[in-house]
Length: 176
Ligand SMILES: [Zn+2]
Image 1 (cartoon, rainbow, N blue to C red):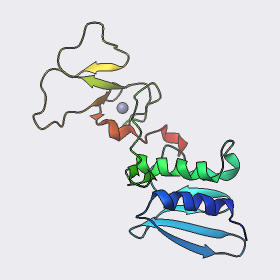
Image 2 (tube, helix red, strand yellow; image 1 turned 120 degrees about the horizontal axis):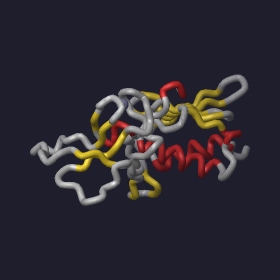
Image 3 (cartoon, rainbow, N blue to C red; image 1 turned 90 degrees about the vertical axis):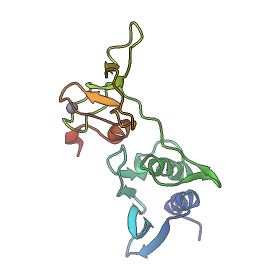
C-alpha cells in the first residue's frame, strides 16, 4: 500500500523533530496520528487536517484542502517552522536547527494586554538619531537596567510594555 499524504506530512515532521514521539490510532474511517513531546500531544493529524496544541500564528489548525501550493512535504516543513517559532528544538536537516523567525513590529502587531493593533512600538533607548521614525519607535529614556531587562516594546494605547517575544503570537482578540 502506498503512503498516504498525511503519513508523508507526519514523516517530514518526525524527521525534523527527533525528540518527538508518534502514536497512531486506527479509527473506523480514518487514522489519527498523535505527535507528542514528554507525553503532551502537540499535533493531531488525520486525513483532513493538522491540529496544533501549541501557540501558532494561525487559528490552531491546518486543513489539507486549504493548501493551494506545495505537497505534504511542504506542509510538514511549514509545521516544523511553527514548532521552531514556538520554541521547540527542530531541524531542517541533521544538525541544522530551525531558528525562530524574527519578529517584526508593525501596524498589524496586536498588543497582548489591550488587544488593539497599531499602537505597539519599539522602544529606543539613549539619545535618538535626529529624525527617527516616530511611527515605529517610542523613546525609552537613557536609564538602562544593568541586568538588561528593559522592555523592548510599548503599547501607546494602554501603556503596556514588554519583550518582542510577547507579541509573537498575538492577534485580534475576536479571532478566537
Ligand atoms: Zn495595549
